[in-house]
Image (tube, rainbow, N blue to C red):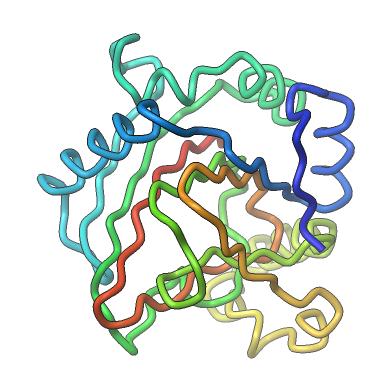
Length: 219
């Protein structure tokens, strides 16, 4: 089961969970006017962003390129996020910001609609800006799959087989049985922290539904 934590500033605890499960959830990480301001900022940036399979996509650069008064910077520059990233990855903090406004219903699932791990390992802070359930593209994660994912990622990249075997439901069905994905159904303001070697996927947005999210990557 995906762990939901309240004391996210306890570095020893969050590191331990990440190493064992590959993910955790912080409930109510953003609320009130701060949530409203960030949601509006992301909607504005997505509206002028690129069209993609499920709606609109905004692709930003490093967190340090944003004004300190910008809602994106205010949320993702929290000290506990910096401390956790430094301890877990030893990589430069917050290399890119990506947001999507998903509102197109399609049976033509994009790559993120398959259970997979990312070719390039990444550490993500993934924030729901709208209420999300399985009818509007809930993120799915398989807690505990991180070791298998890391091993397979190295193997498939070395053998040049990543693209042909990245769809885990087809290539490794027994692993899916061992580490079944869990849908993260949660209200706006919920933060999901995960290592992308953990098996994960997005979901389909039903007709008339929407999902607005923003995430920060460290690679």
